[in-house]
Image (cartoon, rainbow, N blue to C red; front, top):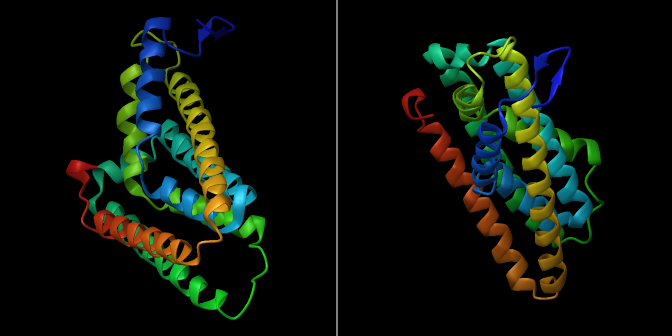
Length: 219
C-alpha cells in the first residue's frame, strides 16, 4: 500500500476499498451540507454551487485535523462543549433558512447582485464546522479503518480523512452542477422557484431542529 520512508499512509487494499465504498455511501446521504449546496446552486447557478461545495470541503478539513489532533475527543467527552457547538450550529442553520426567505422577498424589488464568492465559501464552511456531529463522525468513523499495526496511526487517520473529503467534495460538486442545471431549465416557472426556496428553507429549519435535539450518545 502507499507508504513514505517505510511508513504506511493507508491500510491494506481490502480495508481501504471497504473504506472507499462506505465513504461513498455516506457522502451521498443528504444533510445540511448538501441542502446548502443545492440551495446555493439553485439560486446562484453553477459557480455558487461549486463554491459552496468547496466551502463544505474546507470545513471538513477542519474536522479532520481536529480528529487527528484529538480535539474531537473533547466534544465526545464534554457535554458542555457539545451543547455549545450544537446550539451555535442550530442557530446558524436557522439563520440561513430565514435568509433564504428574506432573499425571496428582496427579489421582488428587482435583480440582486451575485453573492460574494468568499462570503458564500465562508458560509458553507460554517455550515460544516458548526455541526458537532460531523466532528464526532470523523472521530468514530476514521479509526475503524486504521491498521492496528501502523507505525503512525494519526497519519493514516489524516490520509483516510483527506480521501473521504476529496471524494465527498467531488460528489457535492456533481450535485451542485445537477441542481444548477435543473434550476436553469425550470427558472421560467416562477411559482416553482418560490416553492423550491421554501422547501430549502424548511429543510434547513428542520435540520436546525434536528441538530438542536441531538445528543452525544446518538451523534
